[in-house]
Image (cartoon, rainbow, N blue to C red; front, side):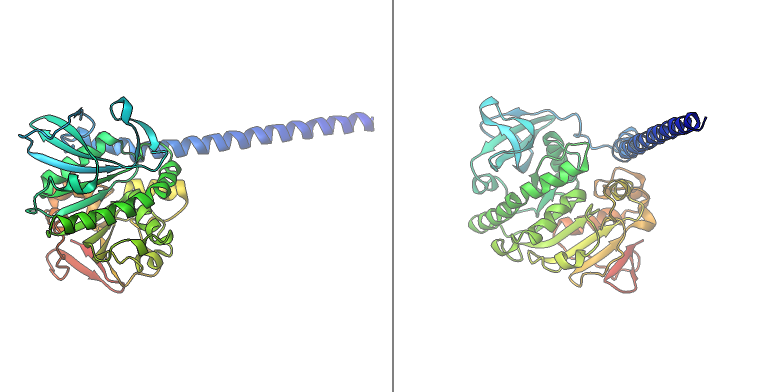
Length: 367
């Protein structure tokens, strides 16, 4: 009798363990699906909603282009793109997802003629930069997560139009679902960014291009800004090439950011822009288990940077410089703020109509 009871008890324990394991697996699967759902809602649905409201980039997602050996004479807009993507030169510059295996960069001038887009290959930055006049400021844009080559072109056109700039896009592959793949590529392309900035500085000097120059690292593009410090590339880069460095909606851990921000010496001024309710950055916080610098700052502040907090006016927005939502319509000073930054100007943070100082840490909120 005891033997029968013990066998029954043993069977029940095995069944209980089996059911417990099934419950754990289901919980893990559910947690994984929840994360996927969060990611979809944070990165896909807001974009679709913005498009549906009619505030969309007129180029993005619909842009097609043609390769041409020369820039069309009647082109009315030029964007310089320096790309680290894996292009196949022999197959008409088609590209595979990922960083070029040999670390090469491809240099393009992208031109617009009415509604048509043309891409012209250049052998080096100096010859490509000679296309531009010195009548507009230069802005280098380092994109964040989820952008392919066509979207990089579209972003360049959009910013050039909105802010009257000579646009330079540092293009790198980020069109993945998983954030970790974008983070991995950021490490791989940081050396290319350092080389690019050095070659741009030399070309600016040779071509006597003296207009203002700034750089914006957007979202996960801020990983590259952090990497140039942590990987010791600063020593080989020119000092004070930029009037402004803009760390916008930075999807990097805010912890210990002071250590690497204080070492940046490429600029006259640094601006760190945050929004506590930035929806994609909430997704980064969940998926990467960190508090992004562009969301909120709990650590000590850098003495070299000005911190601009958009939390009171921006809602859940992430791409405020694009002017796609009601935020800019309700607060025209948002456009003025980014216009000043992108044009290499110093923002007047003492203007009481636009900004209010937050005690400690060179912090201001936009009104």
